[in-house]
Image (cartoon, rainbow, N blue to C red; front, side, top):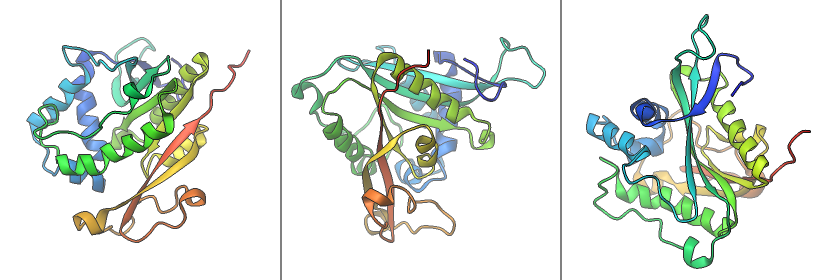
Length: 255
């Protein structure tokens, strides 16, 4: 896939990409407060291997009535051929549901039971407080309708502002439009502006009491989402972090 940056190439991920994807995942979110609470540093090699294994498990990424899609963004060498090897600088994960689901299929628990064999070192209490709560709210909004869900997007911190993340989002938007499907995303404080530019609209602001619950204090200059979705969520209370559930309607493809 061509992008606005000719050196960025989008392609489907393969198992050989898994370790590079895991490295990007931990690097992208390791400095954020939620990332540090979920996976307290230093992150072990075993944790990275577990994460890499979770992308392409031997039994497959099976979800009822759903397809899991991984795409990577590669940075091509300055003078290299367009079909030559590139450096993986970002990746995205989508869950595609083509058909509606009844309530028995979608109204399920999202909690992670301890111990979590698939997520080495993850703080299960933080996961159930944050990640599972997001999925519970998203599930109530989607209610089994056909859709495309951008479940994860990570960009290497040293390779930002190259357009890789935006190119991945556009790839997903094009897929959703080709299928006539609505798209959903849970936007982190940093990703919110990217999704806004790509046509996603605010649906629900979720405010998490980070300081009160975990004692973590916001550092000077940190983005905890205080400027995001203010119209529907109001001012963000001190010590809270805001994530936003966003929705993008399907759009007709250009002729």
